[in-house]
Image (cartoon, rainbow, N blue to C red; front, side, top):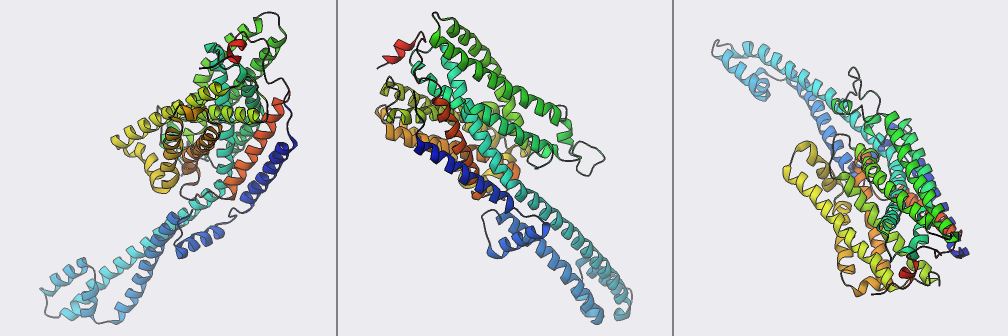
Length: 513
């Protein structure tokens, strides 16, 4: 039986405490009024900052320029009223020049005749510039409101990214476990308890995530644009025809109902699968093993469908004007490789503490092969989705990547390096797949890289260019990491780490190649 070390438990509690402090600080430090945002935008403008405010500063510059233009128009009008007619006509718009010239040909008293038309044209010009000033002021106000909502979304978005990432890492481990059951794999039964321990986080993560979804639907935050007031009402100034066209699918009741079905279905499989596995230890035949086989086969059918819809509902609908038919597979590859990597990391930790006596370098090698292979698969999907949309260059589709390339340059391209280049170069060597320090290093990079991948999928839609990795993001990751460690390693203490009566157990114990 595994014993949860006090040192690791203390570490988990410290991570949770630090995470909570960071999360609370993130919420408390968000701007509370429009005036606060005005100060932030002004500071970004004067400092020329690029971290979370460069676009705001650029927009502020444009608004300020327009405002100065309106001011100059007023000053010019006052000045021209006191100048001579000749000076007025010389500084007027080209249209005024044309009026001046036509009148000049009809009379010799140019000074007297030209003054009235030029003044009239000048008054029109001033009025136009006054209207332009009003429009600029309105545009600036709308921009500040937009930035205000983005900054208020930031701690929510940071919490959402970390929460869904750890939830789906658990789902990746659960899917891998189900695949091993259905494939009747002979190499992996010695790892089943590790997989079951990791999936113990699923009920906890599901509850927290479902609460976040409820809060989004009740307008506590503004993460999902299609939930905004009036977007489906033709008479509302917020009306959005594209979102209204999807309202039969994207409405809160149907959306939260789907979420409940998915989370309950996943948790039911996790509960009964573990129950059958534990019952098999005490059985005299393979009844519970066969029961688990059938249950796992049904679950995988449910999982494939629910996973794709989940990716549309919880991530892609953050950008309701954009869609990709490859998105469900892309998200799956990201959390699937993360789940396998987590299995490998926990296995190596337990092995280093003297547990899992039957796990050998061949088991680690197989896990590393999956880490390598699914990393390549993720890259294939990443490139396929990006290349087709970028090459087609359809405005409503390519804007998804333009936003990320322009505003998230480092995390966007960095994810490719972290999730493909590094694991490819590290794990392509067969011998390296068996070396624990190398596998752990590759695992840490892969997990960090796929957190960044989820960051890239979620943050641009929720906070726009008002992003940076700060207290909210770090605090959220620390909190869920500590909670994950506490739940997983507590679950590992509840049952023997080696199943007793799995029909493939002997093959797994003596797995070598």
